[in-house]
Image (tube, rainbow, N blue to C red):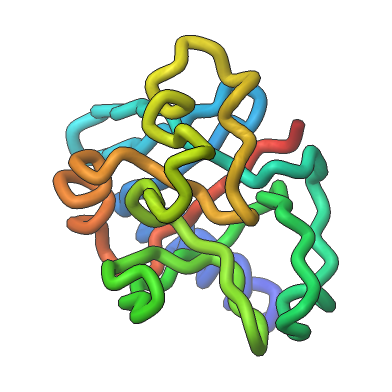
Amino acid sequence: MKKIILILLFSIVNISYASDVPTITVDKNAGTMSVYFPDTNLTITKPVLLGKVKSNTLNMYSYDHPSKSDNITPAGTFKVIKMFSWRLNEPMMTFIRGKSAVSAIHPLWMGNPDQKRVERLKSLTPDDNKITGGCINVDSKFYYDVLDKLPDGVILTILPE
Protein backbone atom coordinates (compact mmCIF):
# COMPACT_ATOMS: atom_id res chain seq x y z
CA MET A 1 0.00 0.00 0.00
CA LYS A 2 2.84 2.41 0.87
CA LYS A 3 4.54 1.74 -2.49
CA ILE A 4 1.39 2.58 -4.42
CA ILE A 5 0.90 5.86 -2.53
CA LEU A 6 4.54 6.86 -3.11
CA ILE A 7 4.29 6.08 -6.82
CA LEU A 8 1.09 8.11 -7.13
CA LEU A 9 2.61 11.01 -5.19
CA PHE A 10 5.75 10.97 -7.36
CA SER A 11 3.61 10.90 -10.51
CA ILE A 12 1.60 13.92 -9.38
CA VAL A 13 4.75 15.89 -8.53
CA ASN A 14 6.34 14.90 -11.84
CA ILE A 15 3.29 15.96 -13.86
CA SER A 16 3.05 19.36 -12.16
CA TYR A 17 6.75 20.00 -12.83
CA ALA A 18 6.41 19.04 -16.49
CA SER A 19 3.48 21.42 -16.98
CA ASP A 20 5.81 24.43 -16.51
CA VAL A 21 8.17 23.42 -19.33
CA PRO A 22 7.58 24.43 -22.97
CA THR A 23 6.61 21.61 -25.33
CA ILE A 24 7.08 21.07 -29.05
CA THR A 25 4.46 19.41 -31.26
CA VAL A 26 5.01 18.52 -34.92
CA ASP A 27 1.97 17.89 -37.09
CA LYS A 28 3.23 15.82 -40.02
CA ASN A 29 -0.05 16.20 -41.95
CA ALA A 30 -0.01 20.00 -41.71
CA GLY A 31 3.78 20.28 -42.07
CA THR A 32 4.02 22.49 -38.98
CA MET A 33 5.74 22.74 -35.62
CA SER A 34 4.11 24.38 -32.61
CA VAL A 35 5.99 25.44 -29.50
CA TYR A 36 3.76 25.96 -26.47
CA PHE A 37 4.90 28.11 -23.53
CA PRO A 38 2.65 27.27 -20.55
CA ASP A 39 3.83 30.20 -18.40
CA THR A 40 2.48 32.73 -20.93
CA ASN A 41 -0.07 30.50 -22.70
CA LEU A 42 1.68 31.42 -25.97
CA THR A 43 1.91 29.08 -28.96
CA ILE A 44 4.22 29.77 -31.92
CA THR A 45 3.55 27.73 -35.06
CA LYS A 46 5.90 27.56 -38.06
CA PRO A 47 6.25 25.35 -41.16
CA VAL A 48 8.76 22.50 -41.17
CA LEU A 49 10.35 20.08 -43.61
CA LEU A 50 10.11 16.38 -42.73
CA GLY A 51 11.40 12.98 -43.82
CA LYS A 52 10.64 12.13 -47.43
CA VAL A 53 9.16 8.70 -46.67
CA LYS A 54 5.60 8.67 -45.37
CA SER A 55 5.62 6.43 -42.30
CA ASN A 56 5.15 6.67 -38.55
CA THR A 57 7.57 3.95 -37.48
CA LEU A 58 11.32 3.85 -37.71
CA ASN A 59 13.64 0.91 -38.12
CA MET A 60 16.49 1.60 -35.68
CA TYR A 61 18.70 -0.73 -37.74
CA SER A 62 19.19 2.12 -40.21
CA TYR A 63 20.42 4.39 -37.40
CA ASP A 64 23.04 1.85 -36.36
CA HIS A 65 24.37 1.03 -39.86
CA PRO A 66 25.84 3.88 -41.94
CA SER A 67 24.81 2.64 -45.38
CA LYS A 68 21.12 2.37 -44.52
CA SER A 69 18.64 5.22 -44.23
CA ASP A 70 14.87 5.15 -43.82
CA ASN A 71 14.26 8.88 -44.49
CA ILE A 72 11.40 8.74 -41.98
CA THR A 73 10.37 11.29 -39.37
CA PRO A 74 8.72 8.89 -36.91
CA ALA A 75 5.64 9.61 -34.85
CA GLY A 76 5.98 9.50 -31.08
CA THR A 77 7.09 11.38 -28.00
CA PHE A 78 10.78 12.10 -27.50
CA LYS A 79 13.07 13.95 -25.13
CA VAL A 80 15.14 16.52 -27.05
CA ILE A 81 18.86 16.80 -26.33
CA LYS A 82 20.88 19.76 -27.63
CA MET A 83 24.11 19.04 -29.50
CA PHE A 84 26.43 20.69 -31.99
CA SER A 85 26.71 19.10 -35.42
CA TRP A 86 30.22 19.24 -36.80
CA ARG A 87 28.87 17.98 -40.12
CA LEU A 88 26.31 20.79 -40.43
CA ASN A 89 28.49 23.25 -38.48
CA GLU A 90 25.55 24.42 -36.36
CA PRO A 91 23.52 23.43 -33.30
CA MET A 92 20.75 20.88 -33.43
CA MET A 93 18.23 19.31 -31.09
CA THR A 94 18.44 15.51 -31.36
CA PHE A 95 15.49 13.27 -30.62
CA ILE A 96 16.73 9.89 -31.90
CA ARG A 97 20.33 8.76 -31.61
CA GLY A 98 21.81 5.62 -33.12
CA LYS A 99 25.38 4.42 -33.50
CA SER A 100 25.87 6.09 -36.88
CA ALA A 101 22.98 8.53 -37.39
CA VAL A 102 20.66 10.91 -35.57
CA SER A 103 17.29 12.52 -36.18
CA ALA A 104 17.20 16.11 -35.10
CA ILE A 105 15.53 19.47 -35.34
CA HIS A 106 17.93 21.90 -36.98
CA PRO A 107 18.05 25.02 -39.16
CA LEU A 108 17.21 24.55 -42.82
CA TRP A 109 19.91 22.52 -44.58
CA MET A 110 21.03 24.22 -47.78
CA GLY A 111 23.50 21.59 -49.06
CA ASN A 112 21.57 20.71 -52.23
CA PRO A 113 19.99 23.74 -53.99
CA ASP A 114 18.12 21.44 -56.40
CA GLN A 115 15.88 20.35 -53.51
CA LYS A 116 14.47 23.92 -53.22
CA ARG A 117 14.12 23.65 -49.45
CA VAL A 118 13.55 27.39 -48.94
CA GLU A 119 10.68 27.36 -51.45
CA ARG A 120 9.25 24.19 -49.92
CA LEU A 121 9.33 25.72 -46.43
CA LYS A 122 7.53 28.85 -47.68
CA SER A 123 4.93 26.88 -49.63
CA LEU A 124 1.33 27.22 -48.47
CA THR A 125 0.70 23.49 -48.86
CA PRO A 126 2.28 20.75 -46.71
CA ASP A 127 2.37 18.40 -49.72
CA ASP A 128 5.92 19.41 -50.68
CA ASN A 129 7.35 19.48 -47.14
CA LYS A 130 8.68 15.92 -47.32
CA ILE A 131 12.31 16.10 -48.42
CA THR A 132 14.67 15.38 -45.51
CA GLY A 133 16.49 12.24 -44.46
CA GLY A 134 14.29 12.12 -41.33
CA CYS A 135 15.35 15.32 -39.56
CA ILE A 136 13.00 18.22 -39.00
CA ASN A 137 14.21 21.37 -40.76
CA VAL A 138 13.00 24.81 -39.63
CA ASP A 139 13.67 28.39 -40.65
CA SER A 140 17.03 29.55 -39.18
CA LYS A 141 15.52 32.64 -37.54
CA PHE A 142 12.88 30.51 -35.79
CA TYR A 143 15.54 28.04 -34.67
CA TYR A 144 17.84 30.66 -33.14
CA ASP A 145 15.11 32.98 -31.78
CA VAL A 146 12.88 30.29 -30.26
CA LEU A 147 14.10 26.69 -30.29
CA ASP A 148 17.74 27.34 -29.37
CA LYS A 149 16.55 29.14 -26.21
CA LEU A 150 14.49 26.19 -24.94
CA PRO A 151 15.95 24.17 -22.07
CA ASP A 152 17.64 20.86 -22.75
CA GLY A 153 15.27 17.93 -22.34
CA VAL A 154 12.01 19.49 -23.59
CA ILE A 155 9.41 17.05 -24.86
CA LEU A 156 8.80 16.70 -28.59
CA THR A 157 5.58 15.06 -29.76
CA ILE A 158 5.37 14.11 -33.44
CA LEU A 159 1.80 13.37 -34.47
CA PRO A 160 1.19 10.37 -36.78
CA GLU A 161 0.23 10.74 -40.42
